[in-house]
Length: 308
Image 1 (cartoon, helix red, strand yellow):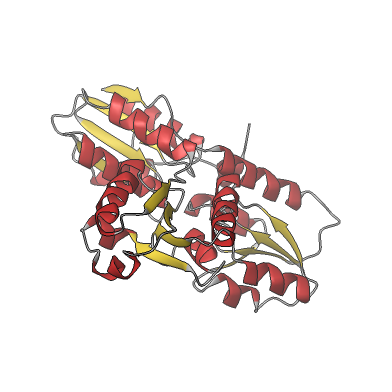
Image 2 (cartoon, rainbow, N blue to C red):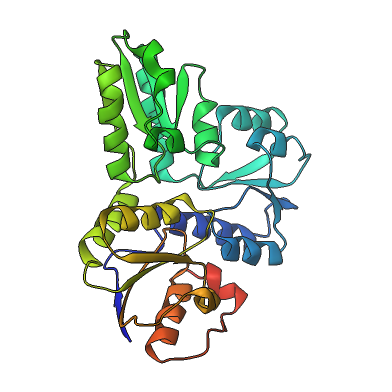
């Protein structure tokens, strides 16, 4: 079996930085306990479970402001996806310690949006509804309007004619989307809103991983995207492969998911991975396929959060 790995893949700077922050926090005896995490530090269940095993209380399943209202003391970890100003205000008003692991690209997007609103712009924000990054951005100001990513890809723009006569209106986006999709949505919306400008905030790590996938997987029989099925940047990799390359593509979370993949007639496999996927998982998948080993993972839980 010939295995070809993407030249650019795996943990991005924001994910690595967030994991380092949490690891340092766990080793700091002065940190107030208990330690809470508002959602998952990054969208990967293996990383989340590894931290839960170390005693961090993971709060999920509701908006960040509702989650933080359940906390009375201790220390709160703000995840790489960021939060809204309402969460920061609550933490400060109630004197609750927090550690901020927000990705720099997410912070940059918020800064751009805040500056544009100050300049009188109306903001159209292309994002995945209920995604934590999207939730945090929308809470910044009532003059930010969600362009639902799934609806926009289907060409559903009926709700945006009300912006057609605006002089100052800008489209920006969630950092983990397909950069090709963002440009397509912009050109479609521009037909409705002539003065619309674009500030594409797809992060460079996402863009590089998608470009490498499009460029490098063409000659293989199968593409495997390794990553969490809840991770938007991972799902975007699969969507990009299916849309721009004429090869079969499957998303797997670890080596054990290979059991459900039909490998009959497959002689070459291209492997890439999401920006929140631990390298150890990808290495194991490659090793098992190359050496015809059983599809059983032997990774230690602590290995998911090791950063070299």
